[in-house]
Image (cartoon, rainbow, N blue to C red; front, side, top):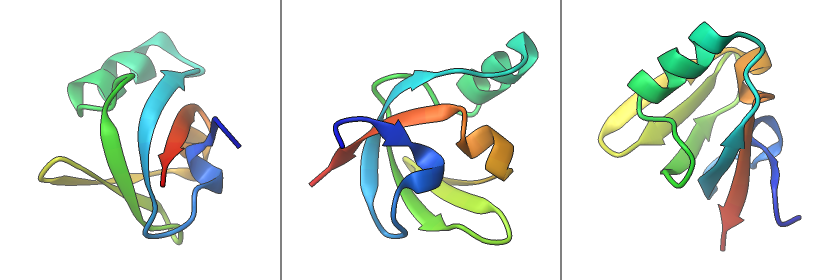
Length: 76
């Protein structure tokens, strides 16, 4: 797929954030403060018990609900 939810990305795969669909505006602000913005490259390290992504030099743990709200374009 050209664009998929972060929650469907395979472990060890890299992707570029395409867009966000947060349920709450504050969540959008929080994700932006953590560096998760459209155009940013990330790598998925773990799916359970939480989604762990690496953004630059930072690793972040995200709830599955939040991972569903982040749409990414996989990088081959």
